[in-house]
Image 1 (cartoon, rainbow, N blue to C red):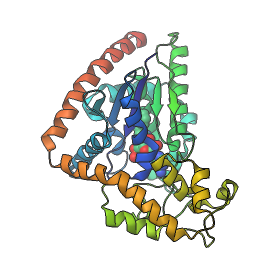
Image 2: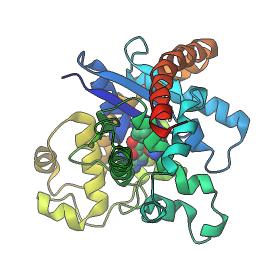
Image 3: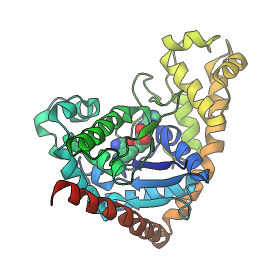
Image 4: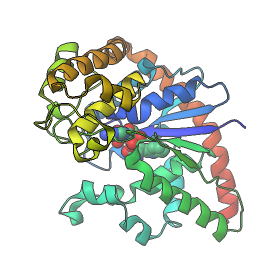
Length: 333
Ligand code: AMP
Ligand code: TRP
């Protein structure tokens, strides 16, 4: 059976190695499988849950599309569009917010992390963010959702919303209950400065992440400066659980090269980190350099990027509007 794939990425700038290994690399593989129908959405409505500068947002939307295409997503095969251009997303989010329970939303750890200490000052949108995400997914009858590990809880909420809606209105199977597609190993890439914190766009120090637009020197420098513990390279897999920084760097190496962890450990066992880091920098540059060169080239072709979004939105709108019509009938509107 063909899979219906949906995923979203926020256009908030600084797309990094975590986004690439946790999500975009997977998108490309799914795009390449002829059996799949894929939709990749630039979720600009999610971005505005925290303050955005409109001019920067516009650039970041284009940069996200450029990153998709430069990484290997083919706009002729997969739908690429930005969320705000298909108004069904906002409408479905409202309707589904009447299905979702506040108790469910209160348990979302991402909200707690993002809102920080002063929860009263967080936007209502930041709180209801996962409902909009559920709307994104459910409007397209998506069967599979590739995301990084940090989005697992939001997907579970989406599944709960779909099931409750179907039950409440007696419409079995109306909303498809989607499956998450999360990498089994190293689904969460950690900060280069702290092996216990995820690599993130919003982290203040740029040294904590490798951006997809970093040049060769920046990549080499960031890996050289990456935090490690004082011991030499681990000699077995069990050691990794006690050594988060070593685990993260070896995980990045493995994800970039598809070489098994055990093999990497054997090769570098007991050696100095500096030797491993030189190798890691090389494989990172080899993988990211062609992508970053292509991103820069595409960014100079604004009308090409805008055309991709326009055509994508037209295709997405047809599917979503059709689903909204059916939702109206079910609701009694
Ligand atoms: P975002 O940039 O927050 O919209 O995230 C886009 C995609 O990248 C989502 O599927 C996230 O789960 C994934 N992602 C973000 N940060 C990381 C990370 N540090 N490790 C793995 N995946 C990540
Ligand atoms: N919340 C996701 C993130 O921050 C982005 C997102 C929005 C998404 N809508 C989605 C991911 C639908 C998958 C499916 O990474």
